[in-house]
Length: 105
Image (cartoon, rainbow, N blue to C red; front, side, top):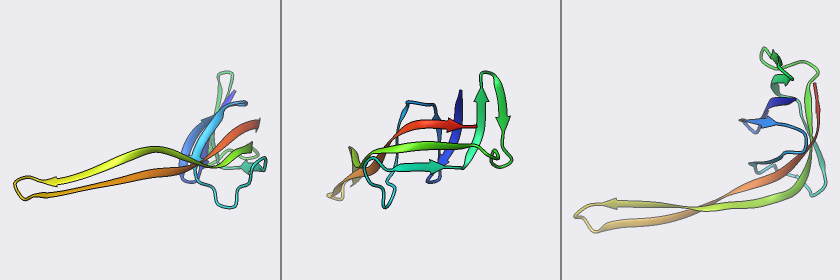
């Protein structure tokens, strides 16, 4: 059984026991339980239920493993040829690591 859930504007496939790295959740603490109720699709062993826009009564219960995880560094390089213009910028995205404890559908 799996569900498609919307977390912070992004859609994730959620199954029990799976780990997710979502965009940073404000005010999240380690071992805190978080519930997400924007379930868009439920697949229960081939029986698919699609919400309009969400599935009523379905939710995903998660536990925060780490409230702040930094992703890999992404380098952004700008250059204009023959002008001597070069600019290098780096960025590390902040994520929250979640473990899915229960899928209620």
